[in-house]
Amino acid sequence: MSEIKSKIEKTLDNAEKLNETLNSFLTIEREYATKRAEELEISANENQSLRGVAIAVKDNICTRFSQTSCGSRILGNYQPQYNATAVEKLLDAGAIVIGKTNMDEFAMGSSNENSAFGTVKNPWDTMRVPGGSSGGSAVAVASNVVRVSLGSETGGSVRQPASFCGIVGLKPTYGRISRYGLVAFASSLDQIGIFGQTAKDVAEVLQVIAGRDKYDATTAETEVPNYAAELEKEIKGKKIGVPRALFGEGLDEEVRNSVEQAIENYRDLGAEIVDVELPNSKYSIAVYYILATAEASSNLARFDGVRYGFRAENAPKLREMYMETRSVGFGAEVKRRIMLGTYVLSSGYYEAYYAKAQKVRTLLKQDFLNAFEKCDVILTPTAPTVAFKIGEKSDDPLAMYLSDIYTASANLAGIPGISVPCGLSSEGLPIGLQLAGKNWSEDVLLNLANVYGNEFPLKAKPKLAITDYKIEQNPH
Amino acid sequence: MAITKEDIKKIAKLAHLEITEEEVALYTPQMAEIVAYVEQLNELDTENIEPAIGGLTPEGEATQTRREDVPHKSLGQELALDQAPLASHGHFRVPKVL
Image (cartoon, rainbow over all chains, first blue to last red; front, top):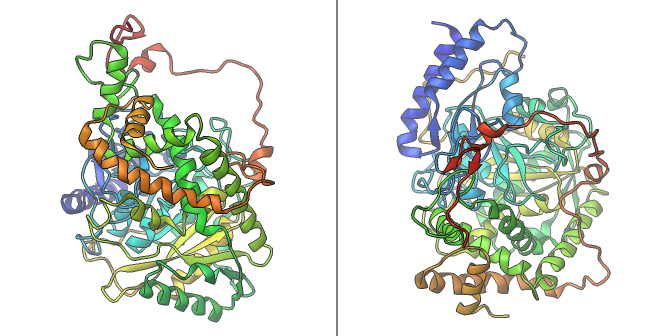
C-alpha cells in the first residue's frame, strides 16, 4: 500500500478510536480522506509544502466535501457549495482534511459545553473542559491525532483552548487570513486561527493560508514573510513587555507562578523584560460582549429556515416559520447572545452601549500602541485558570465570559496573539502563556514561541493521547 | 437600567425568537447581570474619543477593495438551491406570507 494512504488510514483509525471518549470530531471523513491520499500519491507534485499532512478543521469553516454545522442544530447536516479559501489553499498545498471538529455552537462559548452535539473532553483529564470555542480542533492536536488544525477566534477561541490543552494556538492579525467561507459570528473580530503541536507546525500552515484573497475584502495586501526563516532566530535583545497590573484579581496562583517563571526563562534566553501598562484592559470583556453580541444578532439573522439547514415543519405562516425554526434550532447561549445584541442595538440603548463600547475599543487599541513603543511583544497568562471542570461554569455565563479576560483585547485591537505551553499545575494540567504582538508580527510571535518550546517543552503528555504513532514532521 | 421579564419578551420578539416562560425566568437574571457588568464602561469619560471603525487595521483600511466591474462565475441557480429545505421551479419555497 502506498505511503500517504497507509499513514492517513492510521490517522483515521486513531481519530475514530479516541473520538468515542473525547468527542472532538463531529465528522471523520474516511472515504474522502482515503481517496484524496490515493490521488496525492499518483500526482507528480512532490513540492507541495503540506503534502500528505492530515489536518482537522473546525466545523464553522466551509468544506464542499463535508458538513458544516457550526455545532448547531439549525445548520444540521448543511453541506456547503464551496470550500473556504483557507481550506482551498491547504488542499492546494497537499494537505488532507480528515474531518470536522466539534465546537461551541456558532463559536459562542469558552468550554465547548455549548455544542449541540455534546461536550468535548480534555485529554489531560476527561472530567474537564478543553476550552472553547475551538475545543475540538485543540483536542485533535493535543491527543496526537493530527499535528495541526484550524480553529477560529472572535475573543480567545483558539488561544484559550490551546492553553487548556497544552499546545500552541495562534490568532493572527485581523486581515491576515481570508475569512471567505468562515461562518460569520462577529465580523469586526473574527479570524481563522491555527493550532499546532509546535510553533513550527503553526508556521507551516500560516505560510500556506495567509495573504490577500479577492473573496474577502478585509484581507490586507501586506506582504506575507517567510515564517520558517525567522523561527530559529536568537531572541537576544527582544523586548518583552509585562503588564503586571493584570496579574492580580482572579488570576490563579499556580498560573501566576508558572507565567512568572516563564518570564524569568525568557530573561535567561536573552530577552529584555520591561514594564508596560494596559490601563483599559479590564474593560475588554465588557466591550467585547457588547460589540460581539451586537454583530452576532445581525449576522445570525440569516438563519431563517429558507435557504439552508433546518426548517421547522408545519408552521402555517412565514413569520411563524422563522420564529419556530430559530427557537428550535438555536441553543441557549446563542439565544442569550442574540438577545443581548438585539438589546444593545435597540432604539434608546444604542448610544449607551454600542456607541460607548466602540469608543472604549479605541482606548484599548491606543493602550496597545502606547505599550508597543516600549516593547516588541506583551506577555500575560493566556487564561486566568487551568481547564475547569465540566459543568463548573455552565450556569453562570458571566463567570464563563471572564475566562477570556486576557485574550479578548487582542481581537478588539486587531493584533495577533499566540498561546504557548509554559508549565503544569500541581494536578498535572497545562498552563499557557500569551504573547501579543504588533500588527503583522506573526513572525516575531512564532520565533519567540518556537525558541521557548524548544528550550522548555512540557514535561508530560495528556493521559488520553495516541502514543504508538509518531506524526512525522515535514522534511521541508 | 435593570432588565425585566417584559424587556426579555420584547427583545426575543425583535430577534424572531419564541421563548417559553421557563426561558424568560432563566434569561432575565442572567441578562441583567451581564448588562450590569458591561455598564462599568460608564466609569470612563469618552466624550472626545472617536469610535473604532470595525476591526480594520491601518493597513486594512488602506486596502484597495475596488475592482473592475466585470461579471464572474457564481454558484448558479441549481447549486444555490441545493441546500434549501424546500425549493421548486428554481425558487425557494416558503409558507404563506399573510
